[in-house]
Image (cartoon, rainbow over all chains, first blue to last red):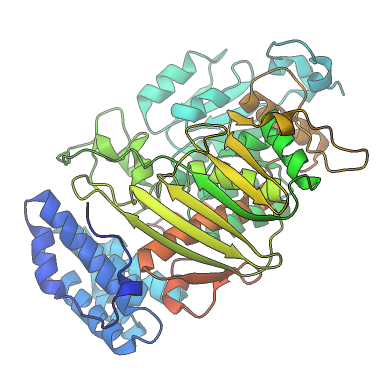
Length: 120
Length: 421
């Protein structure tokens, strides 16, 4: 079993994950390793969005935009777009706007942008 | 108008819908007819059956008199002017969209639990039911269970004093073991794109489709929101907190199974802390049954004078003799359930049918059940973001957490929208 999901509460010093490396791991053929990478991307992303983590959050969003715009597999890019929706800024929404007409991840890009636009 | 509920007292028989008489007959459309959805079919008054799995449709059609319309698109059911009411027994991610659209189309609704996926969806369901003056019963049938009613009567009349803590125990999600199924083309009998509907694309696998969709966050979100709808619905009834209105703090931890595809936590522990009045609710998955009254799942209610156990809380439930034997005082609290001698789920459906005719709020009205489903929804959000959160039910938002508020809605794949179809 993987560690309990208490990262945001337990990490006193936030260590920003290497999202590119995790995206590569998620792209691999070993489903256990792929799932672990997907999980770590998610946990790390949300940890950066805890109140008071502004700089780390912006860095995470930028790294996720790079993954979304890469040539990695569909589900990896879609996962990055989902996470961008939670931590991204209006600038990040603009950065992925060009993906909205993509035949595979266009809907994921639109969902990310809608979620960012819903933020108050 | 005849009252079939009262006329059937003492007779353990199902009163067919046609017994209402031709002028009072309710014509149904049934949407989602596999699993629990299949139990809601009214064979002699059904005009349409809808399911994205043609095998489900074929099986359901055998139970219906005449030739109902068969479709994999619920919108065709809602377009039918001769249909008065719909039942919704689909996976979770369709409940709100279908229920809201059904209200817009002038249909009364019986929608399975869990109510919905998000806060936005729950509010939309309440607003649609009220705006379009529709009866919307949620399939949290514990509120039609005589054992649940007995426990509610015992506690709500103060026999245990003030309830300070409720502890729910429940087994882990059914996501153990190991192995990842290789995605494949959907089977020919399955409209996979329509099954996904509003949620982001994922490739078809049997292990994330029928029944097991529950262990995926996008389509189910685990037992906490599934059985949790039943369990917490009972908690709010028994504690008298249906109208809770002060901010609640929630903390959640869990573990997923790294060797299966499922992303809902297999084990899950949640604590909610309420104010005005102060009390605590715990969800322990897994948890230990209270030795005084064992059951697969249930809750112990700890009061200042006594405690009480309720096991189950859906169609099945049990409680202790002191509650079963308790007679509420004249003028005291008494939770009423339909008197017919039929199983609990049928009592629940009869309550809905009765309310369709009387236009009264049903026993598990969407307004009550929205307040219930808030609690598992925010627990899952607290788990995902990995921090304690405080939710204000007056504003329907988290306090001081911008990211958590981005979980209040889940934007849909096009063309799906809560605004209409």
